[in-house]
Length: 235
Image 1 (cartoon, rainbow, N blue to C red):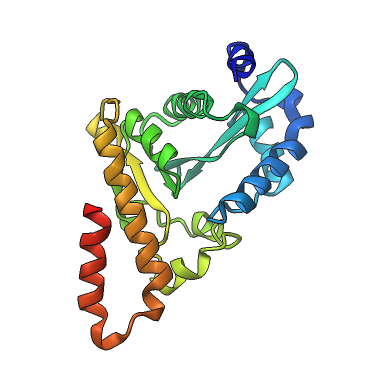
Image 2 (tube, helix red, strand yellow):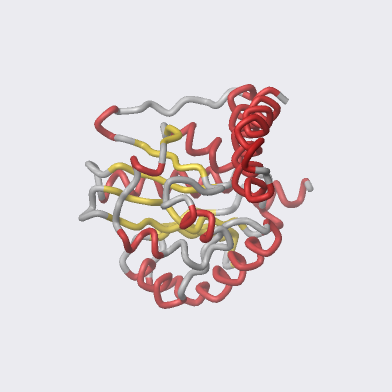
């Protein structure tokens, strides 16, 4: 472990460019591997799309010398009224050392620089990403507060949870929507452990509702759902 920590001190975070195109296959393979391990929603990415983001200077890449360590990119939606930081991934051996936070913060800074008036949002099932977002000033929101750009939601089609999104008329999914609104000038604040546990209970409740609701008897549905809500929130 000490060797990994020492190596991580040498990891540099870059705004990706054409000189990083050779890492595209590695990035996609790392994302796909993470999706299989997690078994939750990570939409597949197209190689040409990742290449385009690099060429446009809209991606962040972390390198340990010449070795790939992590990645993220930014997208604009709704005529640049909304921006999303997407595809956040860290190579397995570099996880647990705060690298995801460094990449996310760099992507956030790039988003603010290129789209200063845009609302920055994200969809995630990961508690670690929720924590990072909260520290940057994001707030949990309903999906109705996110972009209504059809192209963005089409990107969810390759996610394993897409049927849940469609069954709820795009109102709910296992992902939690989070939003940074520059008009409200939210200031980044450290996330207390208790606050993170609330996110954990919220995520467990969402998982129960959307994965198990089809098996709940309609006659007893409301009563069982309320019991589950209290159990998830106060466990």
